[in-house]
Image (cartoon, rainbow, N blue to C red; front, side):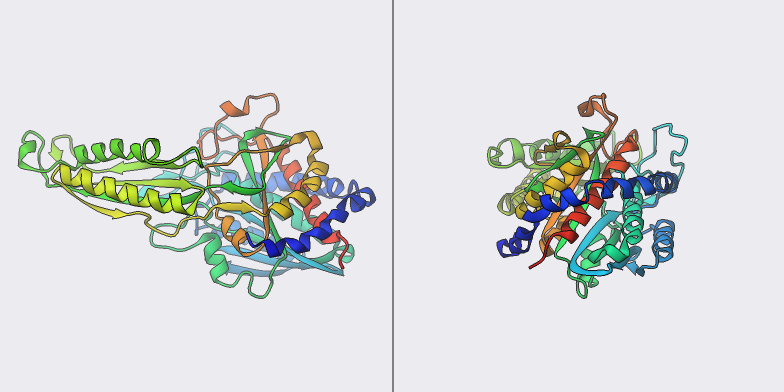
Length: 434
């Protein structure tokens, strides 16, 4: 991050004094909107929409923001919604972000408001579920907006509310998400001093908040490899070139990229194959097999070396089997490493501790998951924190993870998330200015 940008946050050293003046305001405001936040989340959960298709979700968000009297822009990066709150007093500008999209996952939670929605993804009919908690993120930010508007006359500064589509990635051949919002001028006329975001996480218990300064979530890149053989009858494999066997060799050999070629004593790297598609009949060797997957890294040099190693393995394994290979490594723009600005994170941690209690704010390790919030963090100083989703008393390490069809959110997490985001916002906006 650009160290020169840390200077504005030195002002936040005065936050303890502010905390003594308004110790309960965030708690009172969050409690006032809590029932609405839960109701909104139930609605969004029961009616999930995939990335760049959040038509109903964005319509409801925009209607709510307009009802609050805010300036609202719609259609940003296809279905994104942006609103600006101008406080009654002079002060800094900040941005708060929530993501709205769901995943191609068939829900298995048994909740009374479980999703029964289906859609089309990569040419196949799939279930659709808010298996990552974006429904809660959207509902919480709607509540934060309402709470801050309720004190508009006394609020210093300005707040941008960002309701973002396609955090999980845009559909094939489309653009979307945070980079598309920025490309369309999100911060052109309103440049915030800081941007804040949160994510509910099954690996933490309800009541806990996780935070980490510096590199926090991995860079994420997709890859696509097509192994091309020659079709033949399954009873006469010698008359063709088997792309299925070649693909199996390739997948096995690719495991050595991390285990034998990468110095993981420095930083972790992950290479994962997520889908294999090839063939349609039991006794026909097909012409080709498609492999898709993800690469996760924290260092640009390691990232580029992993790309090169996977391409090298693919081409040589294919040649050894008499096949050819088409590689797209990566196949589209990936997410960079999410970096929490160290100065901002250190100065706002007391706000998180006020919201959750100091004993409930914990330091989290590097997270191999990725977030396109990283693009905002490349533009302005950012802080992204995690809110526990697994019920207290349950072993969070054994809970169904985010993206699981059984992902479960303890709804008390939304009260804490709303309160924490309000506390961070109020403390930053109210810090004494020079």
